[in-house]
Length: 588
Image (cartoon, helix red, strand yellow):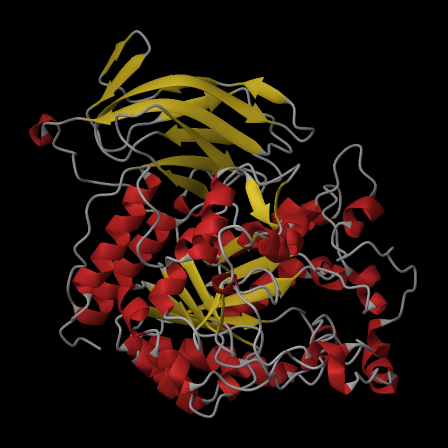
């Protein structure tokens, strides 16, 4: 790319606005991330997809619930201001983006706004021409939806998919990256925890590493009452079986240089007093019961072809002009969004409505990509994009979430399945953008130093950046920092780095939350303090460290630490000042 960047000041404005919001300021002026649903049609009929699956007898109702096609150019043109301020644009939604006849042209359109661009794909269209384009343009990330260590495992679940074709496309993209010496795009695999897939997970990791994959993201299989054939295929995380396979898979990934992100265990873990069916039932949408029917995987294709879909009436079609939050008043919008307090709401506030702007194919705007909903906060055909972002719908949702209430018309399914992001990754996003910017423009993205706390987790491979959690901090103010450690089934050791610059740190209190929500008090001891004065420790290094003791080694769900950390004012007080710990790779 290496042209002269023109929008650095816009990006800085967005970063600074979000930083001020984290410090108690007003809501962010611009979104950090934008989703463009450039296609809501697909060239496959995957068994687990509630919209396109041939196993779903109600699929025509789902298909007819929205107008189908490609994102119109007029919607792109209306996003000009937001795109120039955003850091990351996701060119995908509920459909296959690469079948858009002008897919590469749309990616180029976004790239001109100096944003990182990524997309999810089924991998069927990773041709030589497209792969060359992706590498030449420094596309940030390509995520391929793929599960199965054999052709039968894959093709009987990803109906109409071609196992060898997808693998060849992944290998082609990795080869072209290597030939050009380009780290972009990173190649990630979005993998689903089918039971047969978990049973072969270690060999799958080896297979993906051999192809040149950079990361594997393992997610739970969310079930639908409309597709009972899948209910017996949803894995749950039993420590004595899946736990061992996951540990082996993670170890292989570490050895082979593949980042492995386990988002399955957090949602589907079987606790000491829980029944497997109870945990599996949480993966099922709605209130229906799990099916006991078990159908061999090899019969899925035949069964899919034999299911006669139910045909909706003409009146069941998509509404031409859906009502949005922008069409309401402050008195009626809360009822429209169904805002209510929620028992068991996320302990960490959901940040999606504060950083994300999702545009679907019809121009409807949502605050995230995690819930399939027809409740929109605005529509680009009727409302300016910036006005939607700062308007009644978004701000009502933000105020509610900040006070522990959620818009159930948008968040209900996500909250039930715990599919929401488990932490705010603002700093990781900014650092990922700075690295991409430097590579793309041969220039430094001007950003202010970011202060953050970091929890290192040793699961057997010693402390490393891949297995660490980061949270932003505001120097000088007492604050409770919470880390979600449920992603790690077993923890051998913990290390807490309270700030990433030389500073003075006071630990006010620290607790761990165990598998049954029981709390235990933690003991933190400074490891490299220059001086300790009562409860205050002074660090002259940019890498202050505390040991952590007293946490449950299995099933530790949360680590909560209340601190007061103050950066040292005099930059000359330490020769190490300015050497900051690098955040982990950007994750979703």
